Image (cartoon, rainbow, N blue to C red; front, side, top):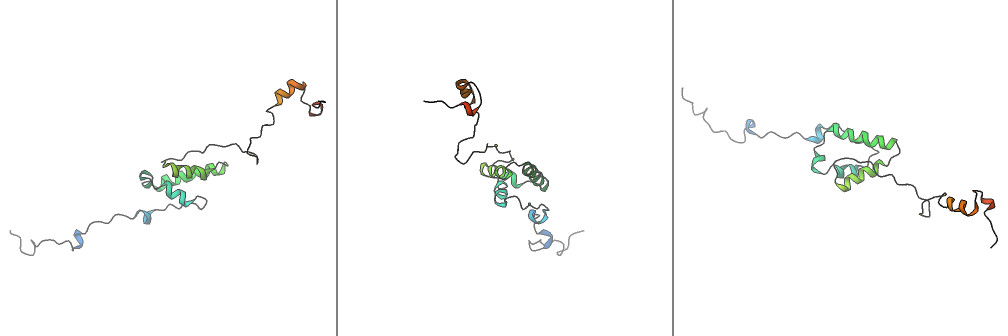
Length: 133
């Protein structure tokens, strides 16, 4: 049996069966919501690197849980996210804990001269540390 002219007609690109399939819109299918306590600008900057762009909702949620754990522990989670964004890191790393400094900028060290004072005066009592010069 030979094909009839209607059966052998060329297929044009305007026919619906030939249209290319559209890619799923990742943002439309995403159920991930960024908590309001996370800086969106830093989050978006962190996710701008090629490997982070491909992060699944589950991976994003794990990152939020990590940041939330640090937040509840009093660790500067915002600095961790900012450092990751600025450094172009894929992961989140706990920021270095910096000791608090007094207003004068010098670290408080009340026992710095305790050993010297004891060697000079022989005791720790402030009242007996006076002498006539």
